[in-house]
Image 1 (cartoon, rainbow, N blue to C red):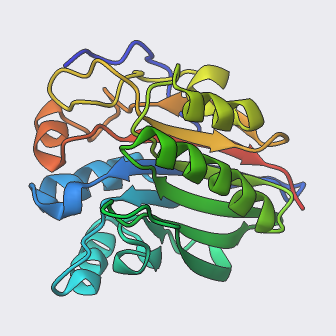
Image 2: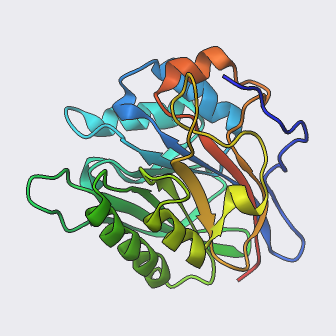
Length: 254
């Protein structure tokens, strides 16, 4: 696993005197918590996120209890999603003031896996932001349709600023990834920090996980948090089969 090319620290969360807020957003495919959940919690904790955009949350027996235990072990609380969205979920820190949440199930083509979005509107100080976690289809045609629905749903949250993240199951050169990145800021491209590739955890050679932000949100850094204090290569290998993406964003006061 390569080391992080960026030594500079990612900005810490804070509320500015003008009401704007710096927030840390983590996107992470956790493979239904089938791996080392203690290592997973350590990785999330070390990232010190305000929002955690999860993919492949537990969906079956006692799924709420499993997700709640992960949230508690990593200093978060459950916000939305899980089995109710067929995988995507949101966690948040106690710094967030939650306005509303909505779990969305997407149209499904016959014989394919059900997909959904976990969404919320939250505030940090005077900054109000929409949030969406997604896990797009493995199938090109269905993925394209869901990419369009992602943009529609983000716009429909009714907030001046929004952030979306997840597992796109496609590289940045793919048509759906390019469509989303054409409408939103791709965090890694806008302000690269850390490492780029997210798959696989042992020999990462492609970027299929990303964090996006609407225009007006300032991306202060975004990438895989290799070398971040508290995160070890052993924990990243043990936690799940993807590497996480961490971003620091400055959200203007609304």
